[in-house]
Length: 221
View 1: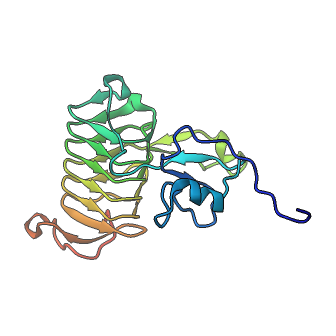
View 2: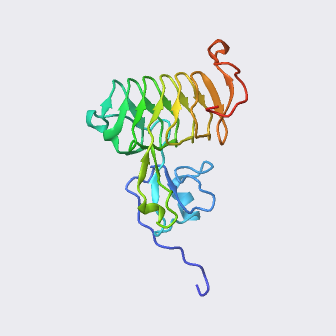
């Protein structure tokens, strides 16, 4: 029909019933089932574009728990694992105690030295870095000035919440909790609860373990 809009051609899926997510969909909806409509009916109303990539949806029933292999780090303790995917850089300088856990999508760089003590829990999308650019020479590009290594240590049974950023040189004490989305630039004492950007101590889990005054100071002070 003259002037009619033509739907783009699309390749058939190997498994028509498989739930997928299409990047670029105006509302980012799943194409597995949609308000009770069969998949085929929904596709007729919402044609897929060939130039937009697709990916498999990860659900609570399809997520994978993947154990670390002995050569993934300098030391790998018993029962360490990550969920689905992890960016794991310079594993030769990372030490994992026993039962260390990483949720999905973490970014970990052990360049400057990184230790996770037993039972450390790392929330999804957490970033931990152990080195930074040297920046002392104003006459040279930063990327040509080399790196400063600053090791990081995550204590026993510490819990790092979702989406945190742990910067080089930081020590997270045993049993400490870092709230979701926090940016940690200074040490967190054992059993402290720290939140915010920059992270600040808001309380201690056990008052008898607080080193002096327990509320309000910026982390590391």
